Length: 486
Ligand code: BES
Ligand code: ZN
Ligand code: ZN
Image (cartoon, rainbow, N blue to C red; front, side, top):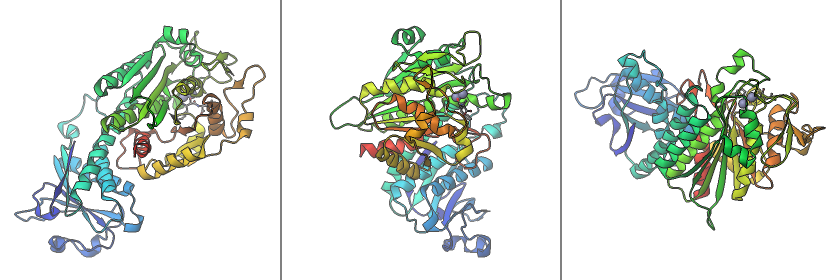
């Protein structure tokens, strides 16, 4: 989708669909005076009215969108308005829309441009690769959006350019997650990493099973040993370690399918488990953004990838695994597999002496119970880093909510026969999972993001989300990394 910014007045330009996003209680432009009863549209958040001006010049259709009150309007409100605009354009089969704002927004024009571009592009996202039954109408895709503004054109343009890059990163992550697990086993995820590296000039290493055995990746191997689709360990490096350039490690859980293994999931809990590589997808998407924006950083993406299956070769409850770190884990439940592959991924990250390790995983059902779909669960070993991630969450609209990671939670993982157990019981299930991970990061500042509740939405509540993968994490990581780059 092509997004451009143009100086001018929205209602004087010809357009098949002009969308005017209006702050509450702001008078409408004079051109619309005879077209609507003022009582019918006050600009309340999410309010919509479609008008047909029937004038020889100017737009054929005008869609009024309410933004609510200026003081309550966030960048996410704009992102949602822009997504609603593209959804309406798709419905009306309009190839290009124009978009303008009515009222004085208390937001930085760079942020406005970025949020609008993200909203336009993400609102148009659909995953149709496996549909052979679509009508022409269903296949119709909007081609572009033009933001028409009387001021700040350059800043809007610069923001929109960034927003488009980020939206493409999100769409890429969504595509990876939405791809069914029969078409995206660990080897295919490895190939995707190589393709990404070639496209963007990243150095990519994909370790296969013999290399994992030689290297002692006991966690990834154990989780993957029950599947005919062998595990992989993926490393993608952008930039190089240099004085004065921060090194950030991004670690993503890459379970291309999680059946639970021998501790098998009930049927209803097993569907959507193709999304158990959403952490990995966020890392892929963020690396694409970082490379396209050419941020002056050293970013290493690390993805342990495996398929968790029950079979006669599967790892068992009661097994003791020696992870890459040398630390041993008593397996009590093979469905708590994410933390086991991540143990290897996090330990591997330490060799880069990172300024921060940010790890994303669809780790626990417990975080779905705690926070639902409206926040990422965050646990951290370093409060400065946690605060940084929180701020990036607010700014990107991918909010995080922190839970404690006190020593008492680590006690809950004590094992008689190994260094630790892989589960701590039902209480504080998300925190004990994080406490497990914290054993593998050394003293490096570490943030764990549990995206189990936010990665996949069968019935999304935001207009910029489509049924299926949300691509969560890409916007948050992009914001965080851009913060390190300035
Ligand atoms: N992949 C799941 C977590 C999950 C649940 C993701 C729901 C998305 C939606 C994870 O591997 C898992 O099964 N965790 C178990 C841990 C338990 C056995 C301690 C869980 O949360 O039930
Ligand atoms: Zn599991
Ligand atoms: Zn899992």
